[in-house]
Image 1 (cartoon, rainbow, N blue to C red):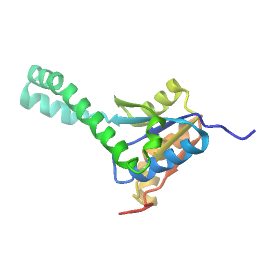
Image 2 (spheres, rainbow, N blue to C red):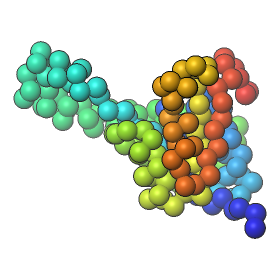
Image 3 (tube, one colour):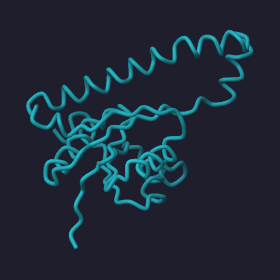
Length: 167
């Protein structure tokens, strides 16, 4: 049986390759009359950095600062993602209804992508990869490579093509 993709999870890190990968998500959504959920994951702050900032600012001031600015950060990111969608679909407004929603989460990107894919029962995960070269992938891995390895769902990875790539 040929797969039907009705629910697509597009994971974006807002990198240079995000637009190229998003265009693939839209193309697949068009072909299958599917809905796209955009996901952006804010990575965890390194504990050593957090400890240093806490020492400098004081634990209570840091906690207060985080609370005060959390909503601002989420609102700014949500607006940035909306602007990204508007810009990418400016010549194709008929595709705007394909966007089912925007989700922003804080955590480990691979785990969060897989968790959200399960929660929304995504038929396909689409994300971009960075052009870091084979050596770095061999030793460090990447979010895309780890999602490919760990996912029980189909994954489409759009490779980074450099400046202006894929346009």
